[in-house]
Image 1 (cartoon, rainbow, N blue to C red):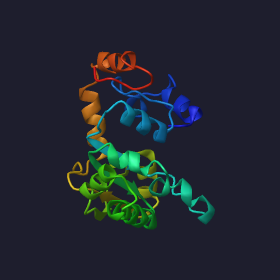
Image 2: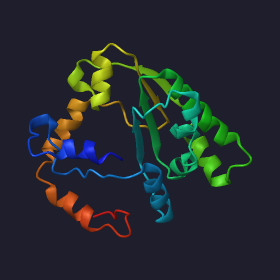
Image 3: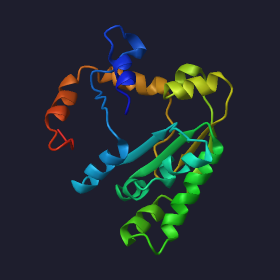
Length: 197
């Protein structure tokens, strides 16, 4: 998250139960494009990318700030792994899919980026549904579902099966005693790039 205020609200001592940060989680105040660049420079690969309800920047003049029009899209693609984007705004996902298709076909893109983009295709685009609000993976997903907005999922081949927020929270609670894993990951940072503990 780029917002220190939002992170501060998530880290407050008053947070308990499902709102508490799991002991094996590490919240970072970071700019994602910079993190992707650092991962690429360190030779790291990512197994799964999840872009959950990114800001769609709906005004035409803000278009370049959308992830699929951002200069860091080739970094995201080159890091490998499957890719899933969730949004309540269908045009965002249609543009994202078209942008990855364009990169895969672009002779101007470096060969390794074209190949990485091609491996993300074909994207599956589905309408997501939740049994209940608490099954939302993020606060935005819960809010949009509760208000009756459409939820959409764009996923590359090999993407993780859709999972509910409730399942993720149960999994994290089961791993709750692994505070040492998060601490080891934080301590093994070298030049801002987390090493595998």
